[in-house]
Amino acid sequence: MYRRKKCELDDIWVIRDFLIKTKHDLGEKVNWIIDRLNFTYSVSRIMNEVSEEAYRSRITMYYEAEDLVAVLMTEGENRGEAFIAVSSLELDDTLIKMVFDDLDIMGKSLKQDIHLRISTRLESLSKEAIKRGYELEDWSEVTTKLELKEAFDDSLPEGYTYGQASSRGSGLCHAKAFGYYDRSELHPLIEAGLDKMKVMDDYDPELDIVVLHNDQPVAFATVWYDDLNKLGQLEPVGTHPDHRKMGLAKKAIYRGCNLIRQRGAELMYVGSDQEFYKRIGFKYASEDKVYKKSIK
Image (cartoon, rainbow, N blue to C red; front, side, top):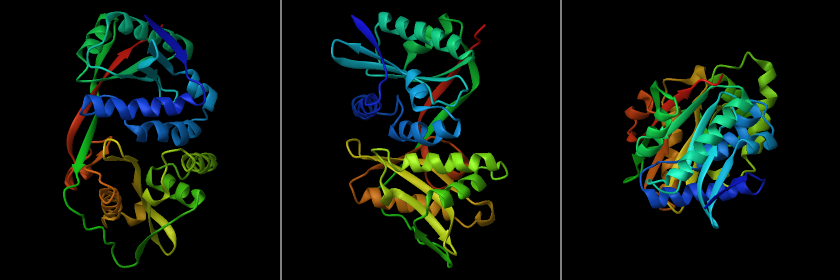
């Protein structure tokens, strides 16, 4: 018998522990890894002006007796994205039905189409999505990984140093890197989001890599470290447009790789298959197909 539970304040960390355990149990990535939960609950949520209460209200946890066996969640970006985290590759039909029934309710309550990500390893969920009227979209989310067998050259060009930056300084660099600097109304939101990111339980200031030029942040790569699985995850990574084509983001990533490698890490993951990551050594790890259902 399964039961539903809505996400309360401390349950965010129950879900975090679930994501860590299931990565360990299931091998290659099927669910989120911890960077996404930490970043969406802090930066993405605040940038999209979603309250903590609203974010948690969109999460449903599924228990069998005392064991958490699945989680239905969104990123809080008001775009109808949905994700199902699972404890097993083989799911009971009753549990699958419960989750998809709740997806319908979510879509209607948000008055948005649902864009559901499903790991290519979860065939039972893909079959149910098609059965329920979801259509496979022509894009997917790919995760790539870098093996940390040897130390990387993380030395910076002359005139650049590693250092620290305030949330305001990092926020303005983030705005430049991602093309929204001209939208001044977003500046206090990214600053508040980075402030929140820095108090997340998994945040480590040593792994918040910032490249400085004349004491101003010009590139960044934040690493989230999962000690149980001996892996790091990058989120976010970016470079100020005036300082691109100098390898700064690559060096920042390599510095993060070296730091977690010293802690015993074996892999670095990133939720992207952009050519930039492939060029610096990242290779295909896993893929989530995207299924859309129009809510009428």
